[in-house]
Length: 146
Image (cartoon, rainbow, N blue to C red; front, side):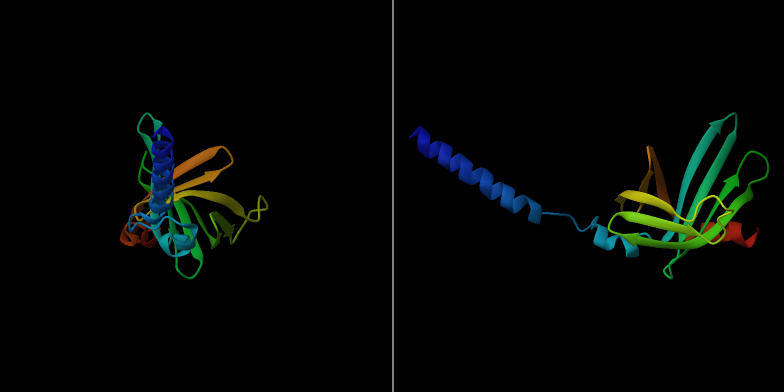
């Protein structure tokens, strides 16, 4: 009898192992969806203390171009360090190629750790950076005033 219970338990675990991968939510987080999902505007806020806060924005456009900049909130909310370039995704690897490298680097390669409709987590080396989706209008208001 114990042998039959063990076989039944083994069969039950095997059935669960086969059935669980087919159960998923509608939020496709597979690398195949990354190129379409990353398009849009993203923001992260860095607090250096003593009232010095920088908002970093990146906008990925559907034509493979991007614009990236920071907004320094310490004095006047001015736009700093505007960078433009092209982007591509291969699997979970995001490659940004700036238009003007300044002689430092030709491209930046980052690993996409998470990409949902509202959150983008990138890793470069030991540094992991989390962005949250914002409206394109939020980015464009800064670029218009720059």
